[in-house]
Length: 349
Image (cartoon, rainbow, N blue to C red; front, side, top):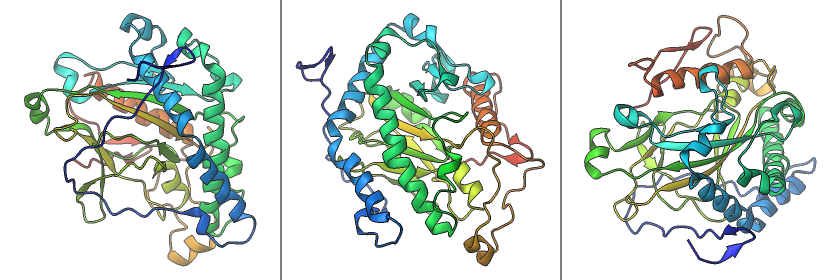
């Protein structure tokens, strides 16, 4: 890290890119500035591109806060532990140690929406930079999430604001900004776990936004079942579709299957920081397909995965978080099958 300082924080400079030749996924880059659609789509495109292209310094500020947070003493961080046993991911999740270390090799700090529902204590470091964290989070919601939701609505041939109206920032429900740190392990320790740092999974929310991270390790599973690395350009945001949007689209929009593996050898000895924003529907939104002419034509209007009863976005998220907690903390030795209402967890490793 550079010795210069930005405010009370040390400035953050990105790690060097790997020089190894990796097998990268051939992903589509959505250059939304080229979309030629009616109804103000060009304005939406410019809104998102402005955020991506003009906010590198803000992203690095958040990485500086991320790095500074994880340097706090463990006993200080544990004061803000999240209650994952109850499916609540607000706050701090420590790295697992001992015999459970192979199951969970990261620390996380999740900062929820800045609404009265989510008022809670935070470390002084976070309070000292409260306004800029809030501004950053709101920019992601307003300038990235909402325009993309309108574009997805256009694809589904539904009212442009249908998805937007189910992701109101002030409504009850949880979105959060995540600071995350993976810790390097010896080659021998990683080999025992198949060089996997985070097993293949999908996210449980609507969309996940991953900001520039030069330490390679993120992989996606292709439709053919192959794992390939994901490039992380400095001038782009990686967007993962997640479970809630798959349910709402009747399976037309598929959750991104992804995992994290041991970085290449020229990066394997350094920690891997991540800056991620998780967008979720409002708490009481039912996870069933929208009424869509497209889904009707494709025969996807009925639920592709039948819940045994109605399940809300909040219930789905809490069930997945609590199930993962039981395995991560050793309460169960085998990963459980059912998540909720007869829908099972899918495993990809």
